[in-house]
Length: 69
Image (cartoon, rainbow, N blue to C red; front, top):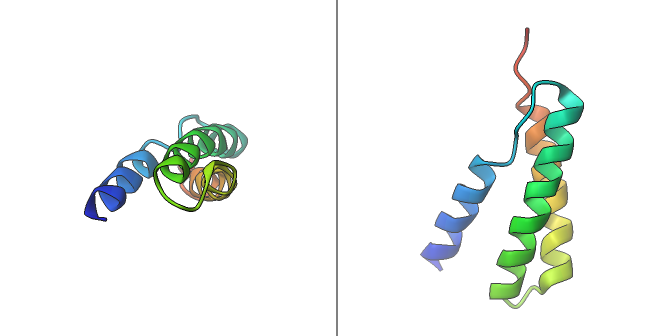
């Protein structure tokens, strides 16, 4: 179980790339979808639900962590 938390933390740390709010939300969603699908495949949740959750979390984190200029 610990390995899933470590994997999730590592994947979420890479979710936001880009300079603007929109770029970070889109790239965060994409990376989140991929990482969520992988985590879903390794757990009983399933690939599609994992990808959907990963997309939402990744886009949210990406948008929320946009640097202020």
